[in-house]
Length: 125
Image (tube, rainbow, N blue to C red; front, side):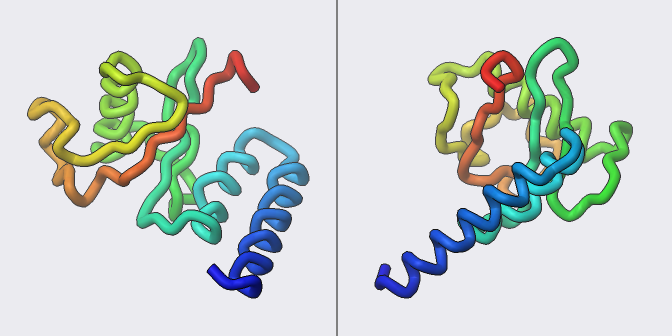
């Protein structure tokens, strides 16, 4: 990465930091997290899973509103719950479609699962 590329990445990071700090609600912060971080880390889709008392999907990139009854959102919630109890639990880890059990294979796993899961815990924020 050249100096110009590094400068652009740093500028994008600083802009993202300002957008996150300017978020007036958890909903706005979730939107920034799943829609604007693609500038720094390319991905097809991002989802924000909130842990704590009310575990749930908070935001999904490309969606302005979540429908908790939508099959994809329900499946994604089952994936996150599975990951909570999977071996190698950590704050950040690589995830491939093959790492999911067959019971979660109802959706095309290769299309739906990304490469990275970052855990955000209410107790730490």
